[in-house]
Length: 271
Length: 325
Image (cartoon, rainbow over all chains, first blue to last red; front, side, top):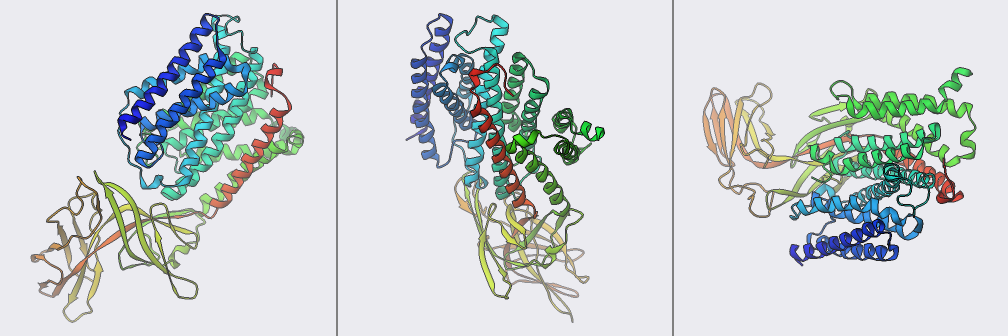
């Protein structure tokens, strides 16, 4: 298997995501949303995408989380997978795919511009804790994206009228679901920090060094804690809660895809 | 009592979190250390939490949340203790030499007990593989130390597999290089033998360094002449000693010579012998007794939080309500 084979499989997966996403968006616009077809389309895209990641893993001998290309590809997969699990289990949430899928599209577009060159696996990455750390981070970010999806529905309704996306539950229920996503993301983010500290202890001899990635991931954790405390104190309306969830998602997203570009520390993340 | 009730307010928790969220990333580190910011926030959180536990029965019906907050409080206390007793340092040890308990650089907490002075280990050599483009592979460093009964114990350590002695953790680093072994033979005095560490290789192409022998010995500048590169960027390789090392030796205000192993440079009051070439490894040293306790505390806390949310979310379906909490 060569890079060309891997790229072919990846592009097939991206085409499946694109077709499914457009089917969902157009279906929603023209009142012919086909939830089962969209669900199967995403599932098929995930299976093909998993094949692409597996090919690269076998070819290079390490997981897809060393360079930007690999992290983008694996995050598109994990975002879609986490959202798909909710899509499968929570049928009333399915129309929120039209808010989530554009975020995936943006990452897909970015991926097409990134050099798919092979990456070298640093010696300090050779530990099971790295896989645990990254896996937990992906779950946390996927949960925040799902929360941002339902929050996006609330914002869309406020911007374009309450009748929009009427297939979904009311704003109050969506607000509660978004809150639960943040709460679950908070648990996984905490575990991600713990696993990262264990890895850092092994890799660099210290569990915490205030490098930019560590500082900003702690900042995101604090933001989430602030959100979880503000909610019972002020009982904000769903729109305010929705905006707050988007702020959390953007903050967490920037930890993955922003800070590593500015950092020169050993803990580089995706650069 | 009213004062304690005020301290117990959830508004204080929000203020502490807001302080951390705003100050932690925005204030320049040169102005205030993140540790100070976290220390202030953590201290206020502990006061707020203790006051809340004293005044409110809120946690009685939420044991999972209580476990999480108590664990967080304990974590902060342990982290504080850890900062008081921690130690971090660096040392370079030549192959065939012992670490004698004295780091080259060291920073430590005010309550660190200085036990590193009793640590000894022997560097028995290392291997490092390199990929194309001088991408460093794993380091495997053979070390030996004495157990409690005086017997020798051997092991292999690396960048992520430390040697742990009396809770001090020694990790290999990318910092390593060559070390000419030189003997100063003063006329009528005892010879002094030492391995002098050249700059880190392959980081520095210029392999020159200057040292002085102890006891008013001569000051010398040595350059290792690499006739062919030890590591070739264009193909995989391994860190090794040059096959026929040549040392250019210059004595301050004295003679110069190109020397092979075994050669002697005569000086008016003695001579310097180039015994041979070895390598040295740079180690990072870390000491923090609270590490395991911090981990256990956090895991218990997260388990409590997960239990709390699981119980609360299972009690009510999200789509059956307009407002949760």
